[in-house]
Amino acid sequence: MGFFVAYDYRLWVKLGSTASAIPTSRSTMTEIINIDNVGITSNSDTVNAIDYATEAGFAKQLVSGNSWSMPFGMNMDVTSAGYKLMERAFLQSADGVCLQIWRESPVTDGSSDDPEIVAGIVQVSGLSEDIQAGNVAKVSGTLNGYGVYAKYQQGNTIATVTVTNGGSGLVAATTAVPLVPVTPKAGQASGRGATATTTVNGSGVIQTVTIVSGGNNFVVGDTLTIDDPTVFGSGDTAPVLTVATVS
Image (cartoon, rainbow, N blue to C red):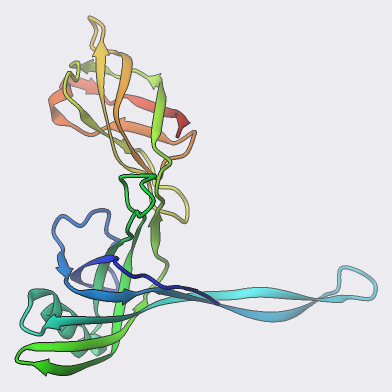
């Protein structure tokens, strides 16, 4: 079991279902205010299996499953939008209503401007409220993970990229445009927040890429492209870039 206590974290939610995708941003989500704890508890189920590959055979402990949850506590106004979403997900949990969540960690040592992010799909259980004064209540419960969660690490920002395929029919990006992963990483969240400017030749092929913001959660070898309509012309071919170094 692993337990990570989370003080001064921020949490955003949005109604969803078991079929919802793990969020890749919090732009359309509602923040839950006054969270005082939203730690992650993870568990691994194990079984003992006998390996008969050798003559005598021996026991191995194998992981058969993983689960995670977020016990939470907060002091909040029960009329707030965030609380109403959480309460609705709890009351309609039997109907498959879930929450998409986005949790950001604080950066306290000044090492990065980018928070560590955990995003996933949860079901709400054990919701309780203790009215303190007026509409203010002490609320607690558990967010039970449905499937795996995605984690965006602090740091791992892009330092340089190489142009694997310069595309065609493109226009130079003189202002910063987004660089996004072509395919997601297996078992983890893809990098986010990277932007760059570019130069192109007379045929609309990218010649150079200058990183403006390195984003976070990238690794060397990640395949990227540009996600901005202002750089594409008619009959264009999207460029392919490769992360060369990170910091």
